[in-house]
Image 1 (spheres, each protein chain N blue to C red):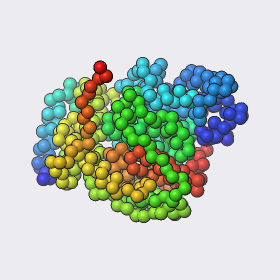
Image 2: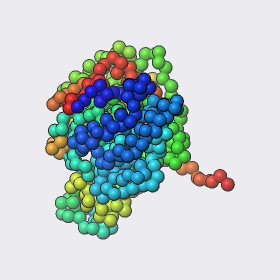
Image 3: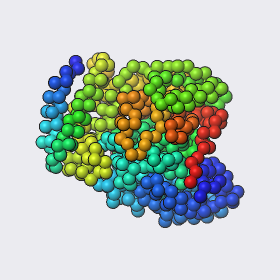
Image 4: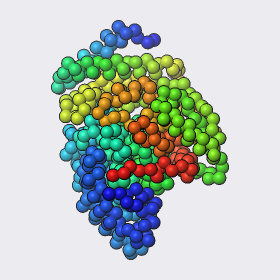
Length: 71
Length: 462
């Protein structure tokens, strides 16, 4: 279900907080705003993707081939 | 400064070399001189490689004189996008933090071109880290804003900026570019040249910077479709150093005698500039001479959302340490310095959702394309933007509908060819998008178009 604007803003802020906890160099205020905007965009992309219904049978396009060497 | 050799094709130069009208050394010297002057003026060059070029050219000359002929690229100068590793020279990825980076190993594409006798003249400029940090204007490379070969007031496009300008300006007859999403097609269309983006996994990525492991492709940028086919034939093929190349299907063989069938994606250019629409419609009339043309709609899937999610996530993973260490602070474009941080917060379920859409979409799109030789659309809905303006102020991203999202998400091959001129006298491009592994089909289609038009023979004057 798509988020309303307020929820999206809270999720985006939380994600940014989690990110900043990992950074060794702090972001400027302008950069923090930019990061927040881009996080909000990724949230909208996630919503856009979820408009396509998928079932449990819809697998990702990944081919995992367990490796075995020649010997 | 230009003469008959300046914009000669690979095929033409090959004939001239073999008749003795020009030598590989002379061609190398000409290419070095023009790249050193005009190429640098266009901010198309990171590093010149004159020592290597002259040595390779001399070797080519000696070999050909001794009857050793390595094929159509023997003695032909070229440029390589500066994310391809060449021992002995820096490989900067277009980014100041990596300006002095060097690799001991040679990219497979470069090695194959070397084996074929091609002559490397320069490492060419690119948007920093192939645009993965989200640049929003043209000054996003350590070499400065890339200038268009038709007008220095226009952007050359990206991220294979220098490759587009160097070929467009006649510095070299071909260059190697790469595309994650748009980076061959954009500079090719904007500079009025031909660009081939092969099926994902057709050309080895070994020795090339990785931006997005499942979306990075390497391809030729040339004056003609024939030249693109020639270069592609040399660089493509299995490489144990790049596992995806080991699992591909044999390239399909086009039937030269039959009539083609194209699907025109009207939805891809409903918001395009008027001249782009006019040029596309004119091109469609040319296509009708040798093809049945039918309007088609793309399957309705969130192509761009899935493609964007994959690029963001994979790029963030590829550059995770670089981001967390604060090194993006050294990037040229201010918006790049915190441009990819957000992608570190994308959850795995979103990335996997995008991969699930890729799988479902791949089957839906192949079904939709069955029976067609290609889907056709403007390569870009607009000409090159003014170099001094943010991209969004010239053409809104949201209006930029083309086949880039679906084509790159699904790893489909595509070729762009020039098809006229538009606003401010700048080139426009036409794209032929093929089914997976149908490089031969789209090359044949684009070749048939170029046989009936002369846009690929138009060049800027210097």
